[in-house]
Image: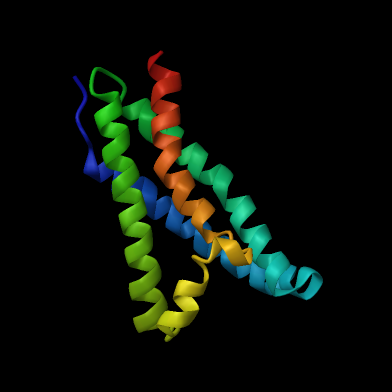
Length: 134
């Protein structure tokens, strides 16, 4: 029986964080001059999502077994919680962004795609768990 391994889950999330920060830097430095702010937002979101899939697959490989669904649901909630917490704490208290600016990225009805990252973190571990255990 496998159980939730927070060390692996947190380590993989840190890996995703490094990739997300690097992706943001590359996007802002090289993509924004070519595609503008919104194009860069789309670029950064769509290029990051495959990495979430990869990290969900890596996590699932380590936690296969009878409790795969429980593990997948827990890691999904864990990753989404860490991401939202980081986004707001780091974004507000370190980068100095206003709450309004931070909340704006969650307005999918205005074309902001950030929610797709959180949705990916929520569904990819379950999807990979199902694929690897069936």
